[in-house]
Length: 80
Ligand SMILES: [Zn+2]
Image 1 (cartoon, rainbow, N blue to C red):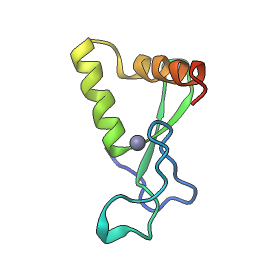
Image 2 (cartoon, rainbow, N blue to C red; image 1 turned 45 degrees about the horizontal axis):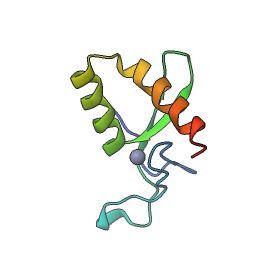
Image 3 (tube, rainbow, N blue to C red; image 1 turned 90 degrees about the vertical axis):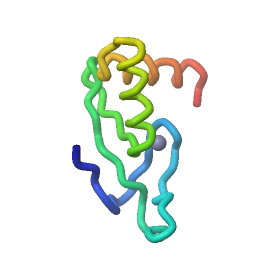
């Protein structure tokens, strides 16, 4: 699992963070990785959101990729 560090315009699509939360790297952007959802959407997530979704997918026994679509659709519905 490789996350991209100090990527220009990095933004987590779930928590909307753009800055690296680590105190040693405050000038850097948040490390993110682009995941592809079941429906082929590109979802950019930070490490902590990724971990959370992976846990959810294990607990709920739902594909990680399917969860991404579900969550994105909920966010759109709520207009967040
Ligand atoms: Zn995040």
